[in-house]
Length: 267
Ligand code: ADP
Image (cartoon, rainbow, N blue to C red):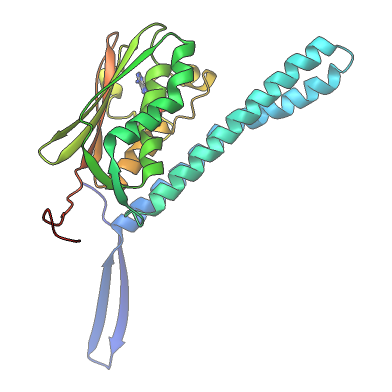
């Protein structure tokens, strides 16, 4: 049984009656607790890079007569700074997405163009590892939405696919329109995700392998951002995966229902 939180107020009405006002505050309690967890998680995630920065600063000071050491520590310092920048950026993006449900400035967009833009952002990283990205499917599918947000969502799925795949493998991206739902599916031949973790990968800061994700520069927020961005568009994201064989992440968005003027008539 779930806990229910009620706030109750009592007011006396004359000498014979009392007025009882009960308000169901369960949802607001739940949101408060989600917020508290998020803040606790953030503090935990920031502790490691901040600790590293202070240690490296001390080490740099101690190593001042050894130019090779200085160079090595300076490089590590700059890596930790980039990691802090990435975490901060993802936290800001996620908080922004959680604060709003609806999209204020949705415009008509081509799903294919969104995916193409996200693929272009990942070309260099894929080529560096010999990974081929193949994009196919419906070029006409249209959705209503925020272009930047949707490109970010697809970009996160592609960069994960690269991150968790072996060199010289292949990533397939398909776009299709099925019964009013536009599907963007990103399939990799990577390590896959254990079944017991499938439900959890969209949680903030959840990683299948904590150490590995941190070492490779992951923030643990990418899939949370994808989930919220897609939900803000009235859509959902699904995952299918088989350890050792690969994963498919599918973004599903409602097709844009556009009322076009009949041919020959001016709009
Ligand atoms: P991260 O920054 O750690 O990649 P994400 O929120 O993007 O954070 O992903 C959460 C976790 O889900 C990752 O740490 C990884 O364990 C797993 N994951 C995400 N995408 C894939 C994928 N394509 N293949 C295998 N595992 C994945």
